[in-house]
Amino acid sequence: MNAPHDKAVRLTSLSHGGGCGCKIAPGVLSEILKNSSGFPVPKELLVGIETSDDAAVYRLNDEQALIATTDFFMPIVDDPYDFGRIAATNAISDVYAMGGRPIMALALVGMPINVLPLDTIGRILKGGESICAEAGIPIAGGHTIDSVEPIYGLVVMGLVHPSKIKRNADAQPGDVLVLGKPLGVGVLSAALKKDALSAEGYAQMIATTTKLNTPGIELANLAGVHALTDITGFGLAGHSLELARGAKCSAQIEWARVPLLSGVRELAAKGMVTGASGRNWASYGAEVTLPPGFADVDRALLTDPQTSGGLLVSCSPAAVDEVLGVFRRHGFAQAVVVGSVVDGAGRLIVN
Image 1: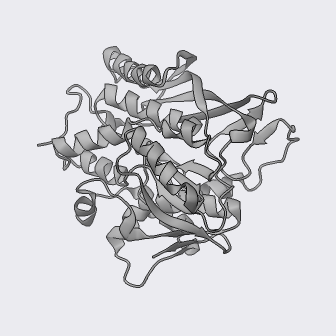
Image 2 (image 1 turned 45 degrees about the vertical axis):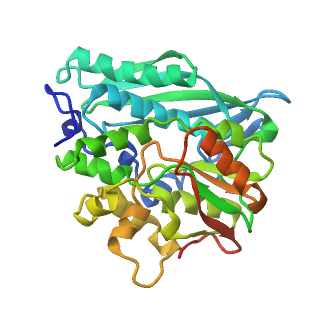
């Protein structure tokens, strides 16, 4: 049984890539940005582009800092309402990944007006509004264009105390790494495009991609939490590497402990992987140490692009139980320790 989709126009047929799999590959992005001219950075800008963090942060006063982020992409599913929900959840996640509380959003909408029925476009927007309502924030405006491919996402703003910002670059040697959601969204999306995803698989995909990373707010209050990021288009390997590079350490992942969505290993073994997985590996594979005999299917999952993926927490060993307790209170039953931070020169070591 295939997953449900809009009968009139299949959204994924209009996009060359879906969800966070649309991201420009890390290596290509680095090449594009390498000659960007510098600009004066005000002292109030607490987090900018220097460590590829999840959002920018600007100090307003001694008690408040503004978090600003944006995220948008082409359809990862065919149901318009679900597409809107996934895109909104993914965009809001970056505020939670900085330890902040979202306060409002602006919609970014690009649609092929002559191809998609207006009702379909309306359902995409309704899906996004439903997630913003769940997060307790308004969509206060936005911008629309007539585009060749459907594009939807949000600009999201949030607030955090300046002393509680959780950067992706502040991990410390000896820290433990905790992952909030299982991997495999990219594999499920590839199966969906090939009409090989069951109704159960689709339901699982929607459940994980529309689950807001609300633990980030509470995690920001824990002194033992040193760094936070979320796992999105560059996969677990890519975002672990960003964390390691920023901290001038190395990250170790215990692969057997990494949670996977049900059935994704079997689907990946059948070739249900995204092109972004291979592009990710080509971009940063030289910085990853794999164990002997590491299977191709495991490498595909390690680099699998996650859309609205889980939080990756770097915390002291003493804080692990508290961190897992926060995840459990927010309904993240599969959150688990997946590795550690060690001395080294910005590598990822997979055991």
